Length: 141
Ligand code: ATP
Ligand code: MG
Image 1 (spheres, rainbow, N blue to C red):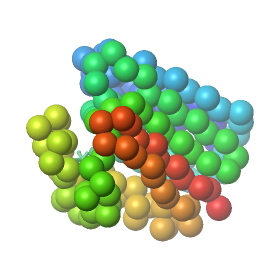
Image 2 (cartoon, protein in one colour):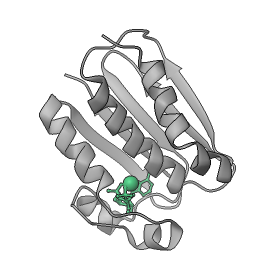
Image 3 (cartoon, helix red, strand yellow):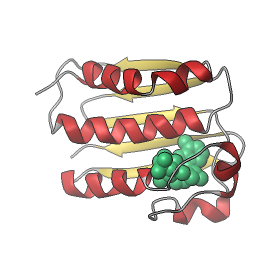
Image 4 (cartoon, rainbow, N blue to C red):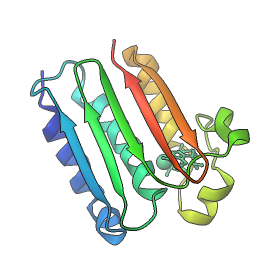
């Protein structure tokens, strides 16, 4: 058992430069103080999802992170994902047309997240509207 808030704070401090540079406000919501599972897996999932939310958000926006006993949600009001690219975002080395203009990256983050979700038996899904925002949902066990 571990404290999800602490893991969240580790992620935030790792991404501190990017978050400050773009003046992103992170809003953390958790009803739980103890969480089951492997903290390193949760850390890596959060780190990649929050990194994306920050990278693909406009300056001065908010990113919402919610953790409950049954799910992790990371939501942004950023550039969103084009309809025709939605089926490719978990592919290794895939980067969206807009994201290439917007930020650097290798296209590996979501492939790693997907792999870890399979390993831990979590279900990952997302909702996104191009130019509106994106929400990733991880259902835990
Ligand atoms: P990195 O390896 O540094 O994470 P990346 O962010 O480009 O590079 P992924 O995290 O795997 O790679 O994401 C793949 C693609 O999915 C991104 O290039 C982008 O097009 C799209 N994407 C992922 N998250 C978001 C998001 N929150 N908002 C908009 N597009 C996103
Ligand atoms: Mg990424």
